[in-house]
Every structure is written in C-alpha cells, then in structure tokens.
Length: 246
Image 1 (spheres, rainbow, N blue to C red):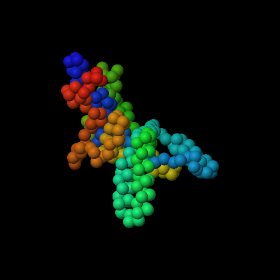
Image 2: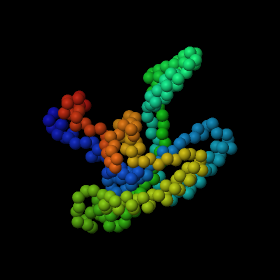
Image 3: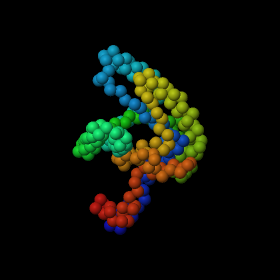
Image 4: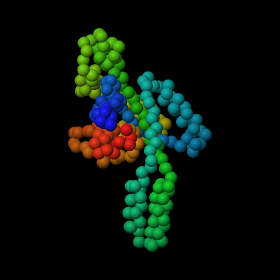
C-alpha cells in the first residue's frame, strides 16, 4: 500500500498537455497555443427547405475558405437548473394572485422533479483554432521535436521559447484567423464568443471532472489564474478515502 501511495504522490495535472491558460489563450507543453470559441446552435430540422439549402451552401463556403485547421467540439453535461428554479421562486413570491402563485409553484415542482428523475443533458458547441509550435521556426522546432534533439545541446523540458515571446507570436498568428472564423460563422447565423481566461479554466475543469463549475466558483484573485484542471487526489490518499480505488 505504501508503494502505491508513493506512486500516486503528485497531481494528475502533471500528465495533462496544458502548460498554462493565460491571456485568453491555452498554451500546451509543446509550445502550441489555442483560441477557443463558444458557438450557438441552429435547429436545422425547423428551417424551411430554402433556409436549409442556404445553410448548407454557407457551410460549404466556410469549409472551402479555410486555410488553417480547426476543431469542432461538442460537450454534453447535466443540465443545471438551479438558477432557473430560483428565478421561478422569486417570481412566485412577487405575485399577489393566489391562482397565479399556485400555477407557478406547480410548474417549479414539475421542473425540479423532471430534472431529478431524468438525466437532462445540455450540449455546448465550441470551435478551437490552433497555433502550432512548428510555426515558430527551425530553432524552436529543434527543441520541440524529440528526434531532432541531437541538433542542439540537451535542455530542460519546457516551452521551446520564453512564454511572453510565444504568446506574442501566437496572438499575431491567431488574431486574423479569429476574425475570419467570426465572420464566417456569422454568415451562418451563429453567435460566436471567445472564451476568456477564467472561462477557459472553468471549461477545462468541467471537461476533465465531468461536473459543472461557474467562473464565480474559481478562487481567482486579480491578475492570478490557477490552472487546477483535475482534482488533486493527495487529500483522498492521505485520508484513506482512495484506498478502495487503488
């Protein structure tokens, strides 16, 4: 058991590819950087035949206009209706008509029971555009690609160049791509919102931990962004809670 405890000492974040999340950008350990956008959705089946054809042609134009890779990600999570139920309760308390108050109370109870008995899922849609570390140049690539490591004296593991220079290079590369994606998706009638740093932290936390977290729940101080994406299991091991899992 002691051996297993020692083997698990440390955080699972050490095994993630993410180096940092800063300046509204995800920085990977190999020097790649990414912008992530949340995109609204359209119910294609509710569109008329003419609108569906227009949507298909607009999407084809978007694909044909791309000169860089992108990733489309769909994230499913349990629907959190807590704020909606609180809104209904506030609305109910403001009403003076007993019949209206009763109807709102019945509806609030119906929503609460439905979510409790059924796994109500919500889907969120994201688009990611990357800046590859290969675009940094030959000198950076030598340190980024393992089989070229003999071309340069061995260095400590880390980013191929200093973080500030990497962010500047990545931003100069990603900003034109960002503007193109926003315009192209806008032509499809979709709303696009770039995830800021706190939202990126909350996004990856929910992806890796499979639970909902608000940016208000993050222990953020001004000018400080923790990259704690996966829960630390040290406390569980020390308390003995993880013995059954080992």
